[in-house]
Image (cartoon, rainbow, N blue to C red):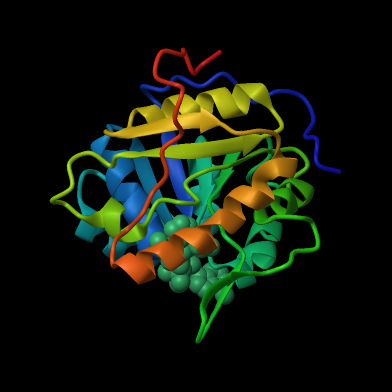
Amino acid sequence: MTESHGEPQDLNLDKVTIGIIGGTGAQGTGLAYRLARAGFGVVLGSRDASKAVLAADLIGLGVRGMSNPECASATDVVIIAVPWDSHQETISSLTDLLMGKIVIDCVNPMGFDSAGAFVLATEAGSAALEAQILLPDSFVVSAFNHVSAVVLSDVNIDEVEMDILITGNNKKATDFSQLLVDRIKGMRGIYAGKLRNSGQVEALTANLISINRRYKIHAGIRITGLDSINLNL
Ligand SMILES: NC(=O)c1ccc[n+]([C@@H]2O[C@H](COP(=O)([O-])OP(=O)(O)OC[C@H]3O[C@@H](n4cnc5c(N)ncnc54)[C@H](OP(=O)(O)O)[C@@H]3O)[C@@H](O)[C@H]2O)c1
């Protein structure tokens, strides 16, 4: 079952608070920094609230830290940024607290060996599809899969020049996520299909990591042909 029930609540982009589950990690703190710079209220979640408070203090910009359940319940939109091997367990523990909310999943099921990054098979078809199954009353969106934590956290990078592919089954949720992404300087949110197409987006990260390793860069993606289009159709 990958269709959620009903519609997400109306949210005011100027007042929305964003929680990040697993927010003390590289990706969580990087996203928190960019989102806080964009003017959002941000809460880092952790299995250990004191760890989240410390990580939040290091970022500054009004970012706060809480336990994962407190973070899920205190915020309007919630990003999942835990490692793939803890995805199912973490999300399952938050099902009730995430009910009715837009949940943005940036998790890439990937492994690493001596040949580099490779894609892991998932039972549901993707991390985001698994999240939607575990959260039948939330509105799961997949986004931020391709943006490197190193780039996000680099205070010397003013604009994060890249496109963020957004997949999701609910139009209101994907539209809102696009607008949220667009507030981050340099980023552009692009709708890229229903959640059944999130697996390819997650998997492409393995190619980007291979590019990064070969050319010693932090690659992102840009989609061509959209320059004169209103993307929020
Ligand atoms: N790093 C990147 O550049 C990047 C880019 C795109 C997408 N992503 C995706 O973002 C996710 C997070 O990446 P990351 O590099 O930030 O990972 P990470 O630093 O290894 O982990 C993030 C946080 O997850 C929590 N965590 C770790 N093990 C856990 C467990 N067994 N149960 C529950 N929570 C656990 C930890 O927070 P606490 O100890 O505070 O609970 C940790 O700080 C991954 O799924 C990755 O695919 C990462």
